[in-house]
Length: 193
Length: 357
Image 1 (cartoon, rainbow over the protein chains, first blue to last red):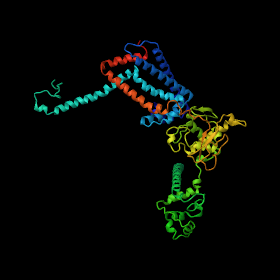
Image 2: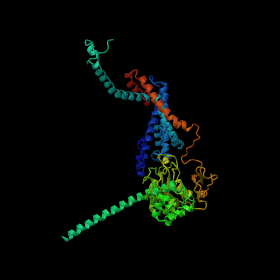
Image 3: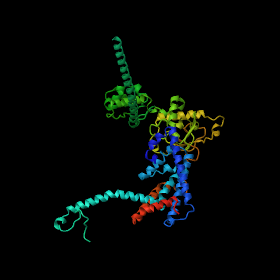
Image 4: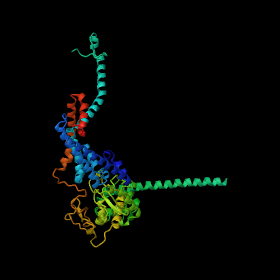
């Protein structure tokens, strides 16, 4: 992700061998920790009974997601070993490829030329995106998204309410039929049902 | 009192000399920049305007060969002739002679060219004109120790490439006096100079060795000086690690290089390279040198069972669409019972972690 955001900074950082080793080493350790965590998760899923509220589709989705994540982690770690200094060469190849995807003009030549292991790594991350909606983990994202939607919608709702009250005060109905309740009078008066 | 005055004068001198040195340095730097810009402009003007009718050292075309023109004629005369040859043909004896000699072909009056521009062209012609060699065309044998060191720094990324390219060590490994270092993404370059030799190396360094951005889109990803320094460093490494024995290249497992014609300019020279070839197949043929091995440096191949277009061009967008649509549908379904979203998320978290049985 850092490569994607600031490729120039990564190139500069990797200019000194010590910094390169530091970045690559840190990345490798994080990758290893992620792989261990994924294997643990997968192990817990194996052989357990499915909860009542949990559908078979989501269980299969969970297996698929964890498997694909494992493939991504293993291929990433193997790439780090077999084709070392990925943080350096990826800024000239994979980063422009991802940017080209964002621009809607995929430069597949950049990834097509890569060895199988790296193509597998890239593909597995796209597969992760496709699998996520069919997992139980998607509900976590849905809940988080719901909170974001509500938080973002709150000021819009408040602005709409204020606007409605302001328009109600300007309504000619107030002067034409003063005895009736009108929206924007301060109460929760609405149209008679 | 005298001593104090002496000190004041001494300091004044020092300050004056410092300013003078700075001014000279600045002038030298600026004039170097201006000179290189002038040369580039002169080359461009010469190529676009003069070469249609004139050659440089290749004989008469429409007008005279311009090699040595700065020695044959006065600068003032050349400037006047370039700007208004049609006027001079009626009055100047040399102009009349040239007019008669070259089948009475009139040269256009280049009135838009200023005196400094014409002087620039003359300077360019005086300094061998189009025959001038680029800095990277020099033989690596002539490199100084400083240039080799610059090449080493450029190779390993200690000194960034001026045009923002990736350092060679990102992908390639090499063995120098400090031992083997660099990436293993692409081939080892320790003996690449022995394999390609000087001219082919110069050609090879003009373009990136595999597709990457932004280098592949740039007209020249290395400055000529950088290209030369890298070539010199590669040569030093090749010499240091030169295998011994009569069949050294075979022993080192070097693939033979292959010269391929550029733009079909050299028919019949499709695979004329050999392990010991070091020069282009023949004079005037434009060739590119590629490794004689069948596999690309990075190991990628197009003949996969599933086309790459499908995997890396279509699938990413499909995956993103599935993600957005899928999460959107699940959110819409969950909003039917908003109060159940949080408990459901907690249950999902437990389920995903594998702790709910």
